[in-house]
Length: 212
Ligand SMILES: [Mg+2]
Ligand SMILES: [Zn+2]
Image (cartoon, rainbow, N blue to C red):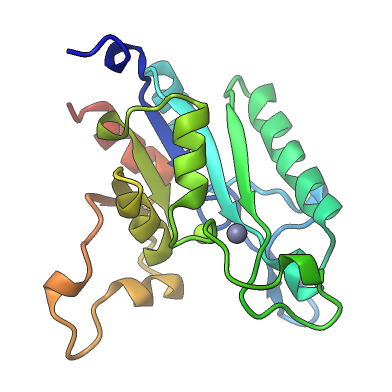
């Protein structure tokens, strides 16, 4: 066994929206957005318990999130940073340390009033593995002992591309899952399924804590 290898830690990298926190629904218009202000933060069921379980089991916790809002002109970079920081503080107040948040603010097409410097292809927007690879290097995580957890096929794909195992938050009443179900004509082999699935972070954490 290499000397460096034993120093690598195990980690769990989590998606943000739809995994840790809920999306934001405007009561009047019915429009759905992702959280872009600290007042929007609502932890999803099972998140606090699940993260505490993973932390207690020795996993380093980190977040990898796509936030294309600034590229699309929906809100600014500072709004994303402030919201991410508030989430980290909210979890820290509950005794759950988040080692690092990695954020992709790019978008391939952008939008009206968007920050032009963020528009175009990038190596970090999930399903690409850039955010995860950066986190693994910075936090010295061992891919063989680490996981990516998220609520979309994009998270699963990014996890696998980074050499991690991947767990899918699979709430049966949610439509974001549709991309995960192979459409007609697609063979099972064209998309590698998640290594685990569960309705909440807690469900996945229980399974991970019991996985060698
Ligand atoms: Mg998500
Ligand atoms: Zn990016």
